[in-house]
Amino acid sequence: MQAQMLAPAAILVAWSLIMLFWTAGTRFPAMAKSGGDLKTAKPGGRGQDLEGVVPDKVNWKAHNYTHLMEQPTIFYPTVIMIAIMGASGFDVLLAWVYVGLRIVHSIWQATVNVVTIRFLIFALSTLALIVLAARAVMATLFFDPGALPT
Image (cartoon, helix red, strand yellow):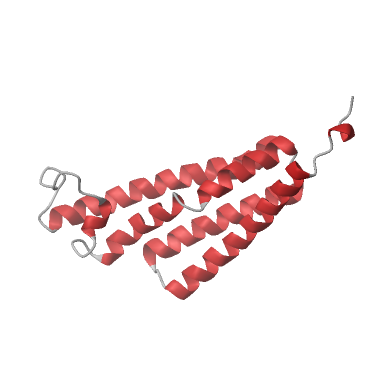
């Protein structure tokens, strides 16, 4: 069950890279259209500097990429802990639910971005993560080495 538990994390890593390329693929042309490019960017410039320079819809992809570098950083070690301690089918299901909802959240934020719906998707994924975190705490805090086969 270890590989099955780690697979959702691997998919979320791959999805994060897809969002990175989607961000670049929309931002660079938008920057060029607005008269700027990487060669003319001010030293030390950051992605936030493009707010108000390129269309909001272009920046939505970058906003989502940033989100994928935030909360999922809690998901990854949680999944690893559960995989090490022994994942159940329920744990694997919760991990897939979390990843599926994060992908839906990404697509929604990058394209439609109605905040009320986006927040609902985020809240549901957070609920899955809370349950996974609680299961990781229980698996580690209440681990009984005497229950292991000899």
